Length: 156
Image (tube, rainbow, N blue to C red; front, top):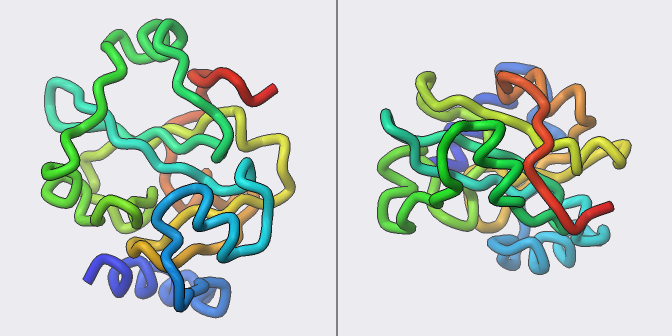
């Protein structure tokens, strides 16, 4: 269901031919990198954090780690991930396929600077065996991101 919603999202943009579906799992950064045949850093990792209202989404490069200090400064809250059993309820995407597309309108999306070092990156497409290749400008526009943030470490 989630994959179909994301695929339709890209159909509406005329980009359905860029959506990839694999015979193998791409549910983790490591598996996605193998499926797409790129380094792990080029996988766009979509993380879901709890906030007072519901959640926020932060997309990072595959090799980046959340820096709790930077995260707290940026968002004025602790970096507490949503419980795995609540991810689908909040985002409409199952763990392993969470992406910044076809989300409920009230979920804010932020993109981490760690992705900007690449010409293209590969976020999931709503399932644990899909991806799409996008430029940083494209992921910003198509995800309706609020802004670029610097909340990660270990990628420079």
